Image (cartoon, rainbow, N blue to C red; front, side, top):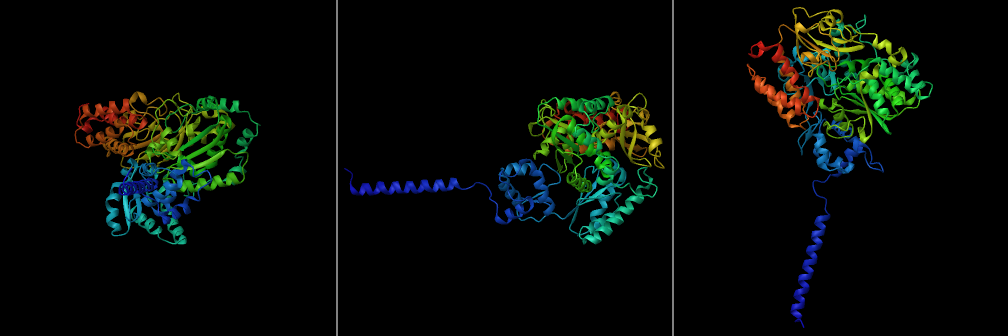
Length: 607
């Protein structure tokens, strides 16, 4: 039998153990990590709305980040914590997405939000037009104002070079004086903003008078709005297809017979893509790529600004023929004015539809060139980091939200109505030098009249410049040109008579891609153009695969030397081409190899 003192001691130990257990349970029951404060939660809820009964959609994460970024000009980490709470997502997941995209800037703690941001494009066309001088002189001119000036990759306004963006507003033909007005505009009342914007647009139109896209009054063509488009027969074909008055099979056959190929760069036959996705089990989805980040490319923006409903009708026809239930339009963030326009015209379409519409959602990029790659774009639409997927499976089988997906570039859909109404022979009847179809060339650089030039497929550069661009600028003679943007290589003037089309440039070490033509004169150097492109690739690599992430950065540093280490560069070229996951790393060596082949005297090598 225990002594009474021993029983008391045992009891005291038991009580202490119970208290420790209760404290341990309390500690475990507490949420780990940083917790949101009430003010931040209220601010997030005011922007993204109350939590639906089923919870916030995971795929809208980037859209929610945009709302915060627009409201505060940055992403405060306290808001990210609150957003993670509201969306029931790990903070690490929110953070990894927010830090992936260039247009999001995470601010920690009590650090103030960045001031007004001025992005000056340092793409090749803008560099040729004096962007470096703007970047060098603008900070000193602004002095102590709460404005920061940063270099930005191509913003898709190469025909308006040098181009810049003040906050979200594009500034074409930027000068120090025009940028000062645009910066002041951001702090003006709305009425004064309109007057300042009108002054900037006047200068832009005045500078653009040499472009064939400008009418005789000197004004840029007005946008064809919904009412005007309907009054001129628009959406009649889409309504006939949806209502069963036009059969799907003849339309699909017309697309196949037209020879239309994907106009975003890859060039896959459009009709064949429709048939492949149509044969997959439903539900099927569509993803439209208007990311248009390839340096030198601005055709999609140009057509969208002028005639958005021709594209939308093409999308509706494709959706009905293929059996698509929902369409997701992915528009690059740099196209702020286009987004406002498209949102307004979509609202009109949905308010007075010509026929039954599929679900249509407009999604916003966030500054990532890699999202022009189809699977990276799909990842971004799903609210994730825009990293390309391994293939197979292909997105026609397993795409957006795991469903078979028809992915198209904007311009590919833009031509659907004309091809179906006028017949496939109308489209294939154009062409030169044995090629068929039409191509929209984004032409910039040392030509008199840059802009989007709709010309026969197979036209040569010399013909394109002479017939559509007014020739070279005064004081310049043709030295070199890029036929397909950053990825398409750099050709010498001696190849100015090669037909520009799919499959015609590969034997020479390049490709047409998105038909972004940048023309260089005798005062320019091909090696400088190649270095500009390689720095762009290094900046825009998603970092997922080592050959691309390390290879582009190493190549850019090697290309800065007066004499290139060609053997080392070729080692990098081979690894990037053979081992990169997507087209960014695979095509990055093209400008390097072209300089080595066609311009050896520029890099200290023998021909």
